[in-house]
Image (cartoon, rainbow, N blue to C red; front, side, top):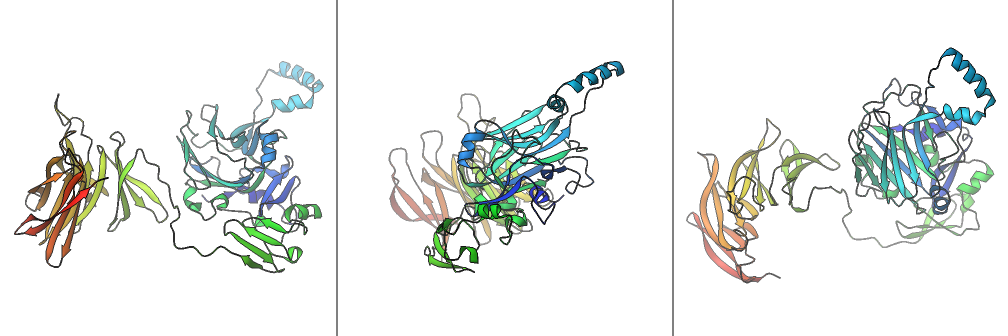
Amino acid sequence: LIPLDLLSFVLEKDPSKLAPNVHVKQARGVRGVHFSGPHTSVTFPSSSKLLVNCELFPQNISIVLTLKIDSGAAKVSILERNEYIFTLMMPRQLEKRSASGLERERKTERKRTRDKKAKREREKLILGLRLSRNRLHFLYRSDGGAVENCKFQSTRLDDNQWHTLVLVIDSHRVSLTVDCGAPLEIFPTRRFPSGPSLQGSRFHIGSRGKWKGLFSGLLRQLVLVPGSDATQRICPSLMPQLAALSVPSLLLDESHRGSDEEDQRIYQTREEQVSVGLQRSCTEQIKGQLWFNPLRKGLYLCDGTVWIAVLEDHKRLDYLLEHQIITTSSETHDVEVFQLPGVGLMAAMAHRSTFSGSAVYIWNHTSFQLYQNFSTHGALAWRHFTMGKKTFLVVSNCGGEPGRHYKNEKPMDFSVIYKWSKKRKQFVRVQTVQTYCARDWEAFKINRQTYLAVANHRQGDNNHTINSVIYKWNRLTKSFEIHQLLPTSGAYDWEYFTVGPYHFLVVANAFDGVTTSVDSVIYVWINGSFQVFQTIKVRVI
């Protein structure tokens, strides 16, 4: 299924002119569509050119829309009544009655007003998008026939600015992303229906087919994306308020001309010396006018053909832009990014929560997506390492593992080593190691032997002066075994490095139970074990 551009279908019914009650207006340098009333031109059957040969609505969909709500209009209209951005409606079937009773009722009904009769025959809603006050409502009719109302509060859309919204709907969740920001999620009590029938249904753009509830703002794009999360298609964006998936060509083509009245709406008068917006064309009609681009922080003069820079912000140094926001189940203490041969780029995240555990994400060329969950207990760090063609992950736990201690004893910490299984396409547990509030793991090789160093922070609540452990891989038992114990004081981190032919290992000590003025130690590898090489006085602040 391809994206369905609902707004283009309305605007391109007759390319030679705009449909009745449909007007192109410009606000803040950006074009949008305004509806002055409901009309057959802004309604069409769902089976026309959109959902061809499809009698069922997709179960998983995304809705992408760019709109602008005038702050003055919001105070007058949205605060007083609901406004519909679009609806999918189906005629309501009249109930059957006996022949004689029906005949008497028909005679009676002919004497009543047509409005009352129309009310009985009104359409019923399948799904729709509605604005009220500072809320956005996604409505749909569930399998049981009841209308579910998913309310997103405090969306702050009525600020006289353009905004791009992405609604993602699946069977049990509805999420809203505004201007490529953090998503808001709702888990409705009634699930989205599994393929509602579309026979006889019609789309209404900017209304629900009546004057009441007519959308008073501007629409720039309205796209239905079946079967996928459209957020990944348009975010991140340099202009998130105008992030575009499919904008009708009429709203991009500056050569379009309507009536004189429309030209007056679209183009600012010559007396207006400075316009403000993100985009604007330079033509003979606006020659000599100034345009300020707030994104570029530049002032430009129109010479009748192109914009000439008058003032421009200096070129900035390289900097990072927000690319993706990943919603996690709890605070994240560490991220380990690594390349898995034949699979791709992965990121292991250490989450504090024991209830939800930790997770590994995979890069899909545009963003990181959840790949595998792990049962962890107060995870503080991940470390990946390789042995030959095999890839391993080890997690530092510092929360005690339920069921691994006896009554009246303190919980014991167990850190876990995982290995990538090519057959299962996931990491599987290969070894569990007892640790003491492990803060860090360091993997290194000396003379083709693989070693792991764990930084044990404390035993219990008060004992910080304990041993940290160096493990060595045993090829016969295919497991890591204790190779050496090194005394540490509230150890936080291990780092391995080499200088010429010498191998060094340094530990960051933080607290000995009394003071933070402790020595961190550099060890050197001599005759198969690490010996103290140098101590460094460190005071943790």
